[in-house]
Length: 227
Ligand SMILES: Cc1cc2nc3c(=O)[nH]c(=O)nc-3n(C[C@H](O)[C@H](O)[C@H](O)COP(=O)(O)O)c2cc1C
Image (cartoon, rainbow, N blue to C red; front, side, top):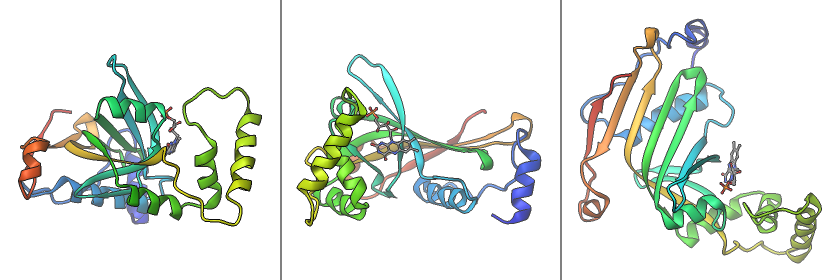
């Protein structure tokens, strides 16, 4: 983003930005558009542009949301990593429907994604796990994410235990830790505009996921919604 564009954002904040939308034709692919917006967010200097809200639902239908970091994305979907015994993972194991949300305030942009999840392969989780620093790998072993913590000492003891246990060796991927891939069937790009006349550009898969498995290419239907 140029300095001029940044200034324009600042002056129009609250009224909608004047940034032009990237070319959106009937052939636009939402993953490519996501890529473009994600790059804009990274270039704008937003801290942790890859952070996103993940919403899951438990068996009773109670939704819950939390932030995670997007680690990979491509035509196959959006991937984040977590503890497979955590509350979110328990929800997702029982109900594979999920919603993601990105908000890049300075750009006045929001992206909503809805889809279903699947676990990434063991190899993919292992590769990512070993790309993390050693402290984070130990942390993954030490934390029983989302379960009750009696006191902070308990966690520190676990950290010390695993630091010693794995001293001098490659830390194995815990069997309770790995990635979830979100396969989107709905994506909505929101761009703030003056006088609340915001853009809402939506994409919906015109085939179900099971039909898609047989079809070589996904077909996205594009439409706009009132702001
Ligand atoms: C910016 C940010 C990024 C986060 N990234 C992750 C992440 O990638 N994976 C993760 O398991 N938790 C991440 N967390 C912590 C989660 O928000 C959450 O506290 C944790 O995963 C437990 O959620 P759960 O009990 O609903 O499963 C992040 C938190 C913040 C604020």
